[in-house]
Amino acid sequence: MLIRRRLNTAIAILILLAGSVIMLAPFVWTISTSLKYQQNVFDLPPKWIPNPMTFDNYRAVWEAVPVLYGFLNSALIVVFVLTIGLLVSSMAAYAFAKVSFPYKDTIFMCLMGTMMIPYSVVMIPQFIGFSHLNWVDTLLPLIVPGLFGNIVVIFFLRQFMQGAVPTELIEAAKLDGSGFFRTFATIAMPIAKPAIAAQAALGFMGIWNDFLGPLIYLHTTEKQTIQVMIASLKSMYIGSSNYPMIMASSFIAMVPVIIVFFLCQKYFVESLAISGLKG
Amino acid sequence: MEGEGAVALHLLSIVGGKGESILTNKVPGYRRKEMLWAYAFVAIPLLGFVIFGLAPLIASAVLSFTKWDMITPPEFIGWANYSGMFGDEKVYKAFFNTTFMLIHVPLGMIVSLLLAVLMNRKMRGISVFRTIYYIPVISPIVAVSILWQWMLNNDFGVINQTLWNWFHITGPNWLGDPNWVKPSLIVMGLWGGVGSNMVLYLAGLQAISSTYYEAAEVDGASGWQKFRMITLPLLSNIHFFVIVMGVIGTFQAFSQVYVMTPDGGPEYSAGTVVFNVFEHAFSYFDMGYASAEAWVLGVIILLLTLVQFRLSKRWVYND
Image (tube, rainbow over all chains, first blue to last red):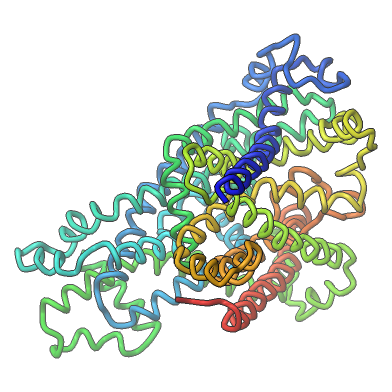
């Protein structure tokens, strides 16, 4: 029995190892290609370790598109939406979780309904609206809707606060003369911090990797997010098969989100698991 | 903040008439104040719902009955956009392609459940695997699509080269052959997606009490029987979540198609519905037609989701 169990474990580890190779190989291949000279890219059989090696492709990307602006634009959207949007969402979640008021369920169901509306249905009227405001080719259409909070976040934080914030604590604070906002800020917020952090991690990933919205609104290179920037760089250089440069740009676009992932890995995985089980 | 509460209250009196009852004196003062605060707290998301959800939804429905290029005034054309779709070959193909891509959902479930079962053991270092399988999930879809386009290159891509060098198989022209484009996108989707469902299944597996298995062992159940009779049904709420989200996500696929096959692929074999909507709206500026197609997609997603919720009562166990 023990031997069989050990054998099972060994087989499992072997399969997982093989799978890991498949998972990681594309990334290794990206880095490998990005370090090659263009004339070596088509060498047969393909070489995983570039020889000769060069960093020129990264410089070429840097000179071809304003990478720094790309990062800055993506980061600006992230900062505004995550600070203000998350605060707004936490406030709404607190009210839904801990206060009773008329029409609470109706309002909540209305908000939940937004989850059912596909972006492709609202994107055209939104585009028309934002072009009337002359917001096309600015970051505003990507920032402003996010400032009003996000129903998925509200739903998740509401679930969390319902379980984690004790009603007695809120009542006690009220008796001590703490106002509504102060009770929220000093009691509910500190308790909900890990859940908010988890949503921040997921939010960062979603905004950083978003493509359709930024693609519709951002046309001038200096105003594009990093994803739109590398997509247009690819379409410019694919004709000349400059794969090392294309791969360098795609690696550049991946690095920040992978770094953030390793820094807050715990939150990513946990929040995904919780939201999945509750949903 | 009192002002904001009043705004929320006003909004509510539009939604329904009874909202004013909290202004009468029946409610004690401190409760009234608390309710006003609560309304203030939910007012901003509610406002966002009206501005960015409800209003565009209505506008989009109206637009779908017009012909409008955003320059000349919109022209009301009745159901012409909808009936026009029946004669539009690209629309047919887009809906077919999108439906075909649904195969990705069950395939992804099988692979991610298998991975989760393999990973569900108490051992040091197992979380390293979890991290590795999760990296593609957090990677930007644009960057991922670009690198897969390079790997799937017919002549020089690493996949076809390896197939030839190791097995002497001549690989297909993945993104250039109408029969292989969709399988290519599905494979890429699996690579990028199994990690997230795996994490869900892993959490589900860890939540199953070991007493079930112990009881089954006493009765002499085999490993497969335990999996079939205990594990699978007890994960039904996760299967449900994965299917619902998978279907919604598949029906909204856009970025990978736009990046890997900017023209919709050979014979439009890769074009999805959202891709087709995008083309009509932002390449041809046919806003009415695009809105109509988006509405058809939205209604299909809604119906599919409702049907799944209905069916779920028959097979999803909630403890």
